[in-house]
Image (cartoon, rainbow, N blue to C red; front, side, top):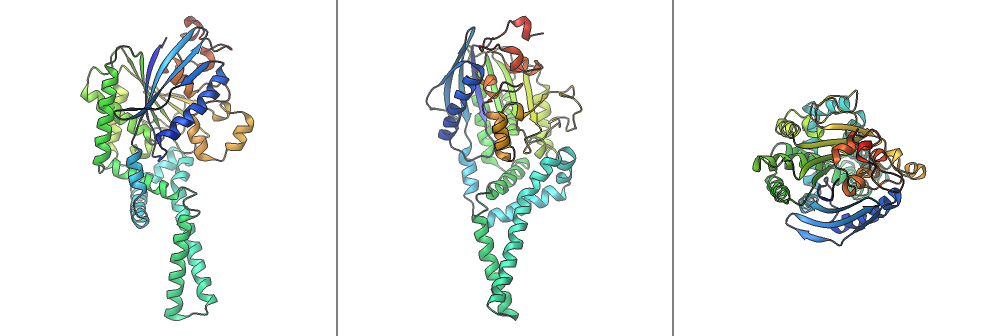
Length: 402
């Protein structure tokens, strides 16, 4: 069983700072401890070469695990993007949407996952809605002023621009429209290799992974990629393997967990061959355990779709790495919580990195804090439900390894 684990977490395109990440983790850790009847405590934050980290001590009657949880930080890049002028955001966002639509990629989204296709359209529909409302407000303003001809057209235009700018601030900010547009702008630039700052940061993350892999006291390295961070995590593992061919050795075991993943977001684009090849290489590494969990209730990811073969799945894994497990978010939450959050799509998306209120086949905190590594947990039909008793004790190896 695992006694020491090092987690390297690559978050998605999210401006949340390290303090909030840590605060949320500590809060969720308490929920995990209550759900599984285990003991778990987290340390304060401390700095690392590539971000911040904290340690977790977790324990049950017949096991204890020390986990180093390291957040590979690229929030500064996200914040720099979000600070760009609104006019530039609209210009580059329009260019990104034209590209993804004209290339046929948007159509492939709907073929792969109609929910993700609709998610792709949401920012565009919000902009169209704002434009329609702004134009209508401009016409009303011109009519109220009894203006006609050139004066009326000018009054309409001025009022429409003012209303459009106001709508971008509210409800645009509340709806995360700017972040959504920048997410697509970033994804397109990264796909085309136009973000040297990101490439440099991923190289640093890869060096950090190689450094951690040299620690003989670590039993498992768990690289976690959530949302857009999933393709970045795959890229990091690929870069690390190129630097250190012996990276995927027998100890420590290297596991890759992708959740709420949007790898096909770029892999389905005709220009995404670099990232398709990257995913194929990582999948071909024999000593890297790659598992992806997918859930129907997460509309901001691809459900029943293989991130490497880029084909719909009839069963769980399709016979090609990564092992794909389909899970249900409603099994992780209490009925009341699920009803409350069901239509909060970002909340459903983040459940993959939050604690469960009920024992279920997928439990992020048990993967991070528990004594059994990623692949055996994923292979168990009931996941951790099959592996741990009512008191949190690990069942006999002969029971969970079958």
